[in-house]
Image (cartoon, rainbow, N blue to C red; front, top):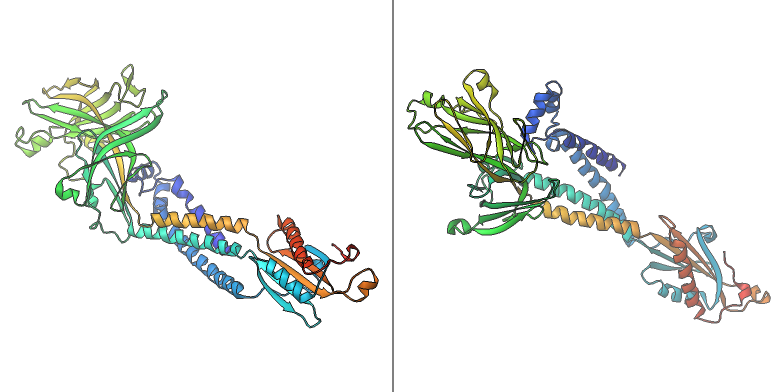
Amino acid sequence: MGTALVLLFLLALAAVPGALVPQRSLNAGKVDDYLAQHPTLGPWLDRFQFFDVFSSFWFTAIYVLLFISLVGCLTPRMIEHARSLRAKPVPAPRNLARLPKHHADTVAGEPAAVADQMAGELRGWRKTIRRTGDGSVEISAEKGYLREFGNLVFHFSLLGILVAIAAGKLFGYEGNVIVIADGGPGFCSASPAAFDSFRAGNTVDGTSLHPMCVRVNDFEAEYLPTGQATSFAAEIDYQSGDDLTTDTWRPYRLEVNHPLRVGGDRVYLQGRGFAPSFTVTFPDGQTRSQTIQWRPEEQMTFLSSGVARIDPPAGMYPDADERRNHQIAIQGLFAPTAQFHGTLLSSSFPAMNDPAVAVDIYRGDAGLDSGRPQSIWTLDSRLIDQGRLTREARVNLRAGESVTLDDGTAVRFDGATPFVNLQVSHDPGQVWVLVFALAMMAGLLVSLVIRRRRIWVRLTTAPAVDAVNGGAAGTVNVELGGLARTDNSGWGDEFEKLTQRLLAVGAATGDRAPAASREKV
């Protein structure tokens, strides 16, 4: 058990880096930013898997060793507990007066009859009656076996939690996707490619995901005057199972901590933001529009940053190179409630009361046809440094305002639409984690409340000389001793009450001896 406690401490210590440095499973972009900001320390941390703490080799090693240690310490304890349940209570010590609780008295009757009466009063106790060679009778009784049982339940439940978590990591998956509200395209979870980020368990290949489609109709948020959000919810429609073949949509109000549960999957409302809309009118009159999510930079005011990349119509520039050199890229800031300090834009409130953008508008090769992955939040600075992307304007625009470039291309800011970040999670071990956690708390409560205690009663025939000293013939000397195996809190009162009950039962078998013959220690 000492080894298990050390390993449990090491497991908690090993989890600390997971809270101090960004994790790839949660936000790969932040990991890339950390590596860029720490060119010396970052690669070393990456080499030792500090950005993947909970799947690292050293965290897994501690986890497995803790599992083995718990099995190794619980198995013999369980066997020993089973043996103690079958064993008879131990015989009385030779000198009961040395026990923490002791009482001596006399009652009328015979030792055997008094012992039977007292044993009948010990209901709920495991007891046995022994007759010794000198004619005395002893009662051994024990109680509180539930304490060790609760202790075993606690530790086996901890073991069960470890197994359930491991099963969830093996057979579960988790995907995140951004869905634009108010008529956005929604998404369908048919494959990992439908998600913006996807973390699969070791046994999940992505071919057996539960089919489900979700579209977001509206997003609502309520704020305090300070700008702090008090609640937010999304009105969604979803399809699952047979609904996909019949094109039936079911409504649901998705709220924080109230996920949609479908086919073993849970859909959580995890984040939110705004997706600005831009319309580009090219010199020949053709238009292209785009609505794309921008990243919140300030969580209190939702000042956001991002990029929009718009390709010109294919018929306008038949030559592929010429068409690539007339792509439009828009990069800047978005404020849901605009506040200008001169030409500098900031946001004063997270609700979309007065949307505005401060943007740089580029023309040239925005990298749409390069085939290389690009960040959806920022432009590739190499394209600007190489002169392949040239800034044509820097402007502040409110909703409905536009700017015209030197070749007649007009860029209009149309406003913004809320978006939500949805997390689809499948964890077959989650219910078992809850069950084992409740069992662990119940076992801990039992082990703290129940006390293991023992009581012994020794009955001997009073010597005949007692009659000379004021005693009576046919009396029995009663000696009681009690011991609590863990702590003595409350045991004294219980022992005194039990002693009174046993002596009262003994007195019912015959007349009590005179008071002069009774002794209490």
